[in-house]
Length: 546
Image 1: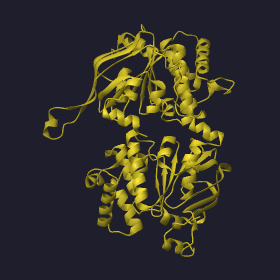
Image 2: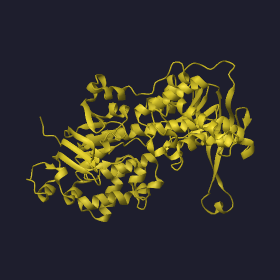
Image 3: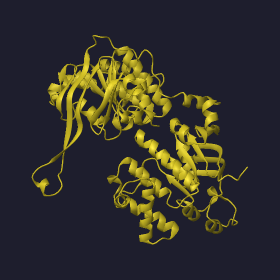
Image 4: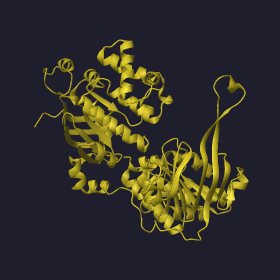
């Protein structure tokens, strides 16, 4: 067997005496694509970071033998000219020479990984200047060529742009260009597509595959997305609680998973509850109805004309829909399509033109007039950690709606209602002692989302606006939350306006579907009409994307 490019043996990582990675072993052959799969907290990212000495305040032991180090760097580290080196035993000065040149990394969120104070071209050129000793002009020309290689249009102009001036896909391509600047032997890709829309995911995967073959580099892919693993990787290693519980070729592991945790991950694809899929009664009341809904924002006009008038950006153009009681309307599209703007307008939080009624009333954008409607229409946001106040206890968070809409309710009655709302979402005092006195940071992501749902349900709304309610959650937790939402819809006859970019979530939850792009409604109809027989080319792209 050929010498592995990277051979990790008995890797252990601990913080303040607490072990988080427990003696794992894996290897990557030259030119191979290995996926490290697991949920948040399994140890995937800290494993990758430890290879480059990027984990602060951690005790790291074991071996990470790397055979792809440049000859000059091997000599500087005292290793024989052709011998592999142990990354975990190298001093910081030697690792600094390896990072970016022999081993490069793509981080999960390019907006936070890129420096906002420097142009994209400057940041890529810096890598070339540091590792290839190029002049400033040569390095900038190389940066432009790298941006062109990743498929960014007008690379010379984009090289002068700052990160905030690029789209999410363009920022990720710039990160890839920076990582590949020195043609590394090994690429560590930490959730490289998680922050991207579904169509961009496919493009970035194809790009990585093409560049990997062209440069002959190996890739260690860190992800929890099993669809991405199926399409991209050669082999897969499954991590649970700091241990690798199973590894093998992608075809073997997915066809015949041996470990219960692997089977659990593979079985975590969102599924539709047959009862939840039942049609609403023919005479079901309409919970929300919109006709010609239009949302626009004022924008500055360039040049002297901007002194006298303002321009207009139309975020939602003439959208029409209705949601009967007990049904879910799924709105799908990429970032910038107008989905979230539509959700905010539906909640009466943005000015709009056209007609929009909820619970038989129209939004008046007056606090006193809209109070009854705000009781009927509640919202569950994408990230439960940022949508729940860290300064409020669980009791205060869940009771908040009652304090507004039923101010005369006595404290014991409020507490009883809060306890029942928590029971309804599967959280009890027996499971979580002192539940009502706890704070959001004491719960997992899935548990926090249950708290957010309980807060919305306590005032008995007729419609929930669900804005990407599971995109911040691991696949197994996502399945639990979607199952809970289906159960609540079945028991209470709730209507949902579901905003998402995930086709699997739409298939699991929606009765009707509306496809949006650049503010336009391209297609709408029943679930089977839109997803099984899509008429618009854009819908077909969404359905077939990774």
